[in-house]
Image 1 (cartoon, rainbow, N blue to C red):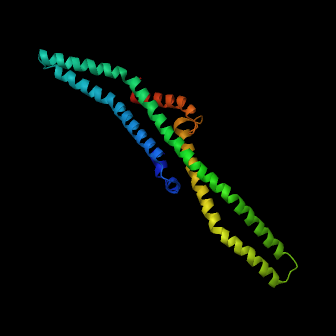
Image 2 (cartoon, rainbow, N blue to C red):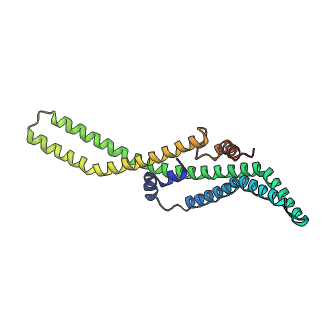
Image 3 (spheres, one colour):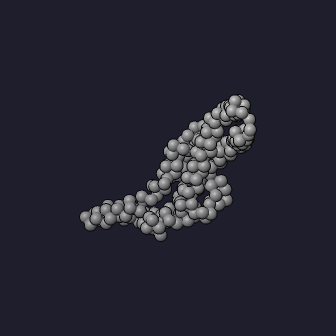
Amino acid sequence: MTLQNILESPELRHTLAALPDDPQLTDLLKAHAAQAARLAVAQARPVDIDARIAGIDRDLVDADDKARRALLTERSLLREERDTLPVRLCEEGKRTATAELAVLGHLTARIRPFGEAAARELGPIESRANYMHARITTVESSLLDRASKEDRTTTYRGELAEAAPQVRALNERIRLVEYGLASIRGYVVQRFGAGVEPQNPNTYGAAAEAYARRVVRAAGVA
């Protein structure tokens, strides 16, 4: 799973569509995309540098003195750049992880209250529905004649039928929010570890450091 998978899931998209426009989320996504692009450029540099150095070494064979000096200067600069890549990749990795966690934290803070509000709204409706069901059971088990039973239960059933669409809508809202939160949580644990809380930036530091170390190791420049 990726951040993009979460953002494009029908469940999360449906939930976000029900909420007001969110310029902050747009800004956070842009910042993350820009930072991810910077990291991608840094990750490509070891291969690019090694290829260029190999090309320079071939060119040196037939170069005259002036060309040789220029090639050796370029080679030296490339080697110096390569030596700094672990630091560069580590920093870009930390910034990328932090930007991604900021998006996930904002999404969590955005959708959780929407589900909690639905649960609060649903509570009294379900309590009333349970009461109606209990009344129907009581009437049907009473000694009243059939006509009286039907007269009373019709009122109760009517109220239940009237509330049913609202109950379904609220339960669906809660389901979608719970799915979104579970997706975010699962992704965070898998990518950054169980100790990270998306809504608490104070937990980002160690996770970002660990992610950055993985980036450096994967690039083979450590």
